[in-house]
Image (cartoon, rainbow, N blue to C red; front, side, top):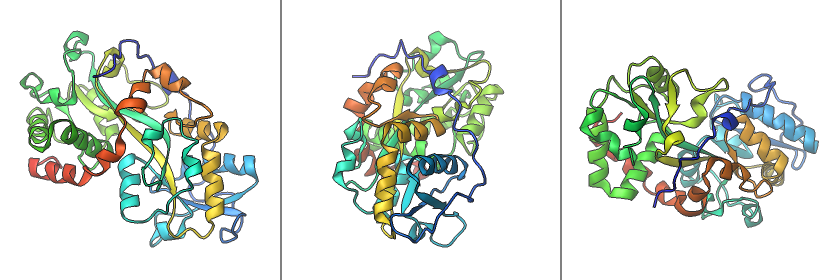
Length: 337
């Protein structure tokens, strides 16, 4: 049963400014990364600016040094102690590729929503975000938007020539297709995806950021994206998030794990423990404009967004992990590239 979202008013909260002062992408205030317990080596496939700001706060709080692995080096995962994943799909596939080692189960007890954790303890969720529908108020009325009860409803003929999609390579879309497979089965999920493609107003765009620009420019009426793309200055004029008036949502996470090749596993554990403290988790979630997952913070922010039912009932992310490969095959068959 879907929770009611009529009171969902989270925009002002989610637009809190991210951590300031990033420094250079791969500079860092590092001690010797090969000295166990003295420094920790971290890696993310994303731009390292926000991560560098986070690690500076970690260093200030703990006195431990750090260094950032450039994604340009050969086999960066083999050189890192801690890997920061940008999505559940990213973390899941890193774990399935055996890049991550099991984490001390005591760290899992620091998470407010245990159902979001990997059952094999290969990574820890640190923050949560939602994927949902965004529409242009000039092209879709609130009354019309309220008739969308599920993501599959965007395959209806009434959206012909009005829909925008970002690439199926976007992790949020891969997770969404896996969600459709779990909810409806492969055949019905593929019918829905083919319906989306038939309703496109223009070609598939590369990213959620590009999709938001297309909706703002009225090149299409609505689309699906992660709410981390709303930016620091608010939604573009005339653009509204459908969940604000009751739309469907899909939960995703960001998180981290300890590299299989970690040379300083104790330093890595210390970093993960700090990231799930109230200070560390708040800094992490703020940096990526998401909702914290530390037990020390609790569900206050979740309750403000009315997201708690997702964490307590619907958030069985590991089930979707096993469906990601099937989702990729479905997208390829349907021509969703």
